[in-house]
Length: 196
Image 1: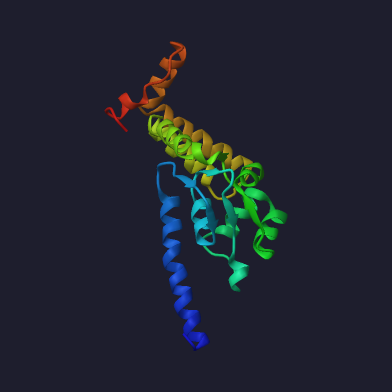
Image 2: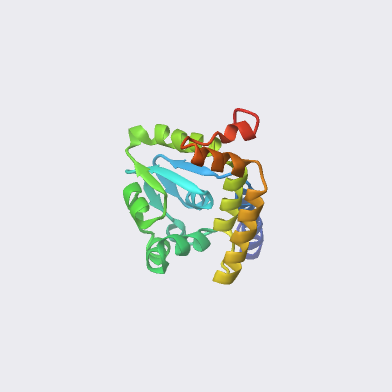
Protein backbone atom coordinates (compact mmCIF):
# COMPACT_ATOMS: atom_id res chain seq x y z
CA UNK A 1 0.00 0.00 0.00
CA UNK A 2 1.44 3.42 -0.94
CA UNK A 3 0.10 5.25 2.14
CA UNK A 4 2.54 4.68 5.06
CA UNK A 5 -0.15 4.82 7.76
CA UNK A 6 -2.38 2.34 5.95
CA UNK A 7 0.65 0.09 5.41
CA UNK A 8 1.49 0.29 9.14
CA UNK A 9 -2.05 -0.72 10.13
CA UNK A 10 -2.29 -3.56 7.59
CA UNK A 11 1.12 -5.04 8.41
CA UNK A 12 0.64 -4.76 12.18
CA UNK A 13 -2.67 -6.63 11.94
CA UNK A 14 -1.10 -9.31 9.72
CA UNK A 15 1.75 -9.83 12.19
CA UNK A 16 -0.74 -10.10 15.07
CA UNK A 17 -2.61 -12.72 13.05
CA UNK A 18 0.48 -14.89 12.49
CA UNK A 19 1.44 -14.46 16.15
CA UNK A 20 -1.66 -16.50 17.01
CA UNK A 21 0.28 -19.53 15.71
CA UNK A 22 3.10 -18.89 18.21
CA UNK A 23 0.57 -18.51 21.04
CA UNK A 24 -1.18 -21.72 19.98
CA UNK A 25 2.09 -23.69 20.10
CA UNK A 26 2.82 -22.29 23.55
CA UNK A 27 -0.65 -23.27 24.80
CA UNK A 28 -0.34 -26.94 23.78
CA UNK A 29 0.05 -29.61 26.44
CA UNK A 30 2.16 -31.93 24.27
CA UNK A 31 5.82 -31.42 23.38
CA UNK A 32 6.23 -29.92 19.91
CA UNK A 33 9.11 -31.16 17.73
CA UNK A 34 10.35 -29.27 14.67
CA UNK A 35 12.54 -30.64 11.89
CA UNK A 36 14.69 -28.27 9.81
CA UNK A 37 16.04 -29.61 6.51
CA UNK A 38 17.53 -26.67 4.62
CA UNK A 39 16.90 -22.94 4.82
CA UNK A 40 15.26 -21.63 7.97
CA UNK A 41 14.73 -17.87 7.94
CA UNK A 42 12.45 -15.13 9.16
CA UNK A 43 9.13 -16.35 10.53
CA UNK A 44 10.20 -19.93 9.75
CA UNK A 45 12.97 -19.52 12.33
CA UNK A 46 10.54 -17.90 14.77
CA UNK A 47 8.22 -20.87 14.29
CA UNK A 48 11.03 -23.36 14.93
CA UNK A 49 12.10 -21.47 18.06
CA UNK A 50 8.54 -21.65 19.40
CA UNK A 51 8.83 -25.45 19.45
CA UNK A 52 10.19 -27.51 22.35
CA UNK A 53 12.78 -29.54 20.44
CA UNK A 54 14.31 -28.68 17.06
CA UNK A 55 16.25 -31.29 15.13
CA UNK A 56 18.10 -30.01 12.05
CA UNK A 57 20.55 -31.16 9.44
CA UNK A 58 24.14 -30.11 10.11
CA UNK A 59 24.08 -28.20 6.82
CA UNK A 60 20.82 -26.31 7.45
CA UNK A 61 21.15 -22.58 6.76
CA UNK A 62 19.67 -20.49 9.56
CA UNK A 63 19.22 -16.73 9.52
CA UNK A 64 16.88 -14.22 11.05
CA UNK A 65 16.80 -12.24 7.76
CA UNK A 66 14.61 -9.35 8.94
CA UNK A 67 17.29 -6.63 8.73
CA UNK A 68 17.78 -7.69 5.12
CA UNK A 69 14.24 -6.56 4.29
CA UNK A 70 14.38 -3.43 6.44
CA UNK A 71 12.25 -4.54 9.37
CA UNK A 72 12.57 -5.77 12.93
CA UNK A 73 11.92 -9.43 13.83
CA UNK A 74 8.55 -10.97 14.71
CA UNK A 75 7.17 -14.32 15.85
CA UNK A 76 8.73 -14.10 19.31
CA UNK A 77 12.25 -14.52 17.94
CA UNK A 78 13.62 -11.61 19.98
CA UNK A 79 12.19 -13.28 23.11
CA UNK A 80 13.60 -16.70 22.23
CA UNK A 81 17.00 -15.77 20.79
CA UNK A 82 18.40 -13.92 23.80
CA UNK A 83 17.29 -16.74 26.12
CA UNK A 84 18.75 -19.48 23.91
CA UNK A 85 22.02 -18.03 22.61
CA UNK A 86 22.70 -14.91 24.71
CA UNK A 87 22.50 -11.24 23.81
CA UNK A 88 25.71 -10.98 21.74
CA UNK A 89 24.90 -13.88 19.40
CA UNK A 90 21.27 -12.73 19.21
CA UNK A 91 22.44 -9.23 18.27
CA UNK A 92 24.75 -10.61 15.58
CA UNK A 93 21.93 -12.66 14.09
CA UNK A 94 19.42 -9.80 14.28
CA UNK A 95 21.53 -6.74 13.46
CA UNK A 96 24.10 -8.22 11.08
CA UNK A 97 21.79 -10.78 9.46
CA UNK A 98 24.37 -13.43 10.36
CA UNK A 99 23.78 -16.87 8.85
CA UNK A 100 24.77 -20.04 10.70
CA UNK A 101 24.65 -23.72 9.82
CA UNK A 102 22.88 -26.49 11.72
CA UNK A 103 26.02 -27.67 13.50
CA UNK A 104 26.54 -24.14 14.86
CA UNK A 105 22.87 -23.90 15.85
CA UNK A 106 23.33 -27.04 17.96
CA UNK A 107 26.62 -25.88 19.51
CA UNK A 108 25.06 -22.52 20.42
CA UNK A 109 22.00 -24.19 21.95
CA UNK A 110 19.69 -22.60 19.37
CA UNK A 111 18.44 -26.04 18.26
CA UNK A 112 18.52 -29.23 20.31
CA UNK A 113 20.23 -31.55 17.83
CA UNK A 114 22.00 -31.44 14.47
CA UNK A 115 22.44 -34.64 12.47
CA UNK A 116 23.59 -35.59 8.99
CA UNK A 117 20.88 -34.85 6.43
CA UNK A 118 20.34 -38.53 5.61
CA UNK A 119 19.66 -39.26 9.31
CA UNK A 120 17.32 -36.33 9.94
CA UNK A 121 14.01 -38.09 9.32
CA UNK A 122 14.95 -41.20 11.32
CA UNK A 123 16.30 -39.21 14.27
CA UNK A 124 13.21 -36.99 14.38
CA UNK A 125 10.85 -39.96 14.25
CA UNK A 126 12.79 -41.67 17.07
CA UNK A 127 12.44 -38.60 19.29
CA UNK A 128 8.73 -38.33 18.49
CA UNK A 129 8.21 -42.02 19.27
CA UNK A 130 10.02 -41.65 22.59
CA UNK A 131 7.80 -38.69 23.50
CA UNK A 132 4.63 -40.47 22.33
CA UNK A 133 5.37 -43.51 24.49
CA UNK A 134 6.35 -41.40 27.50
CA UNK A 135 4.29 -40.32 30.51
CA UNK A 136 1.96 -37.79 28.84
CA UNK A 137 0.86 -35.97 32.00
CA UNK A 138 4.40 -35.73 33.38
CA UNK A 139 5.73 -34.49 30.02
CA UNK A 140 2.97 -31.88 29.81
CA UNK A 141 3.74 -30.63 33.32
CA UNK A 142 7.49 -30.61 32.64
CA UNK A 143 6.92 -28.64 29.43
CA UNK A 144 4.84 -26.09 31.36
CA UNK A 145 7.56 -25.66 34.01
CA UNK A 146 10.28 -25.18 31.41
CA UNK A 147 8.21 -22.72 29.34
CA UNK A 148 7.07 -20.64 32.33
CA UNK A 149 7.82 -16.94 32.48
CA UNK A 150 10.92 -16.05 34.46
CA UNK A 151 10.37 -16.28 38.19
CA UNK A 152 12.38 -16.42 41.37
CA UNK A 153 14.02 -19.59 42.64
CA UNK A 154 11.48 -19.68 45.47
CA UNK A 155 8.53 -19.44 43.03
CA UNK A 156 10.10 -22.07 40.77
CA UNK A 157 10.63 -24.47 43.67
CA UNK A 158 6.99 -24.09 44.73
CA UNK A 159 5.75 -24.61 41.14
CA UNK A 160 7.91 -27.74 40.89
CA UNK A 161 6.61 -29.08 44.23
CA UNK A 162 2.98 -28.62 43.15
CA UNK A 163 3.63 -30.17 39.72
CA UNK A 164 5.51 -33.16 41.21
CA UNK A 165 2.66 -33.74 43.68
CA UNK A 166 0.10 -33.60 40.88
CA UNK A 167 2.16 -36.14 38.90
CA UNK A 168 2.39 -38.39 41.97
CA UNK A 169 -1.40 -38.32 42.27
CA UNK A 170 -1.83 -39.47 38.65
CA UNK A 171 -1.72 -42.91 37.01
CA UNK A 172 1.74 -42.64 35.46
CA UNK A 173 3.79 -42.29 38.66
CA UNK A 174 2.93 -45.72 40.16
CA UNK A 175 3.87 -47.41 36.85
CA UNK A 176 7.13 -45.45 36.69
CA UNK A 177 8.12 -46.37 40.25
CA UNK A 178 7.14 -50.02 39.81
CA UNK A 179 9.12 -50.24 36.56
CA UNK A 180 12.13 -48.61 38.22
CA UNK A 181 11.99 -51.08 41.12
CA UNK A 182 11.51 -54.00 38.69
CA UNK A 183 14.46 -52.73 36.61
CA UNK A 184 12.35 -52.62 33.43
CA UNK A 185 11.21 -49.85 31.09
CA UNK A 186 7.98 -48.18 32.16
CA UNK A 187 4.93 -48.96 30.00
CA UNK A 188 3.19 -45.58 29.99
CA UNK A 189 1.10 -46.54 26.96
CA UNK A 190 -0.91 -48.86 29.22
CA UNK A 191 -1.92 -45.73 31.16
CA UNK A 192 -3.44 -44.16 28.03
CA UNK A 193 -5.18 -47.23 26.70
CA UNK A 194 -2.63 -48.46 24.18
CA UNK A 195 -1.20 -46.65 21.18
CA UNK A 196 -0.37 -43.00 21.66
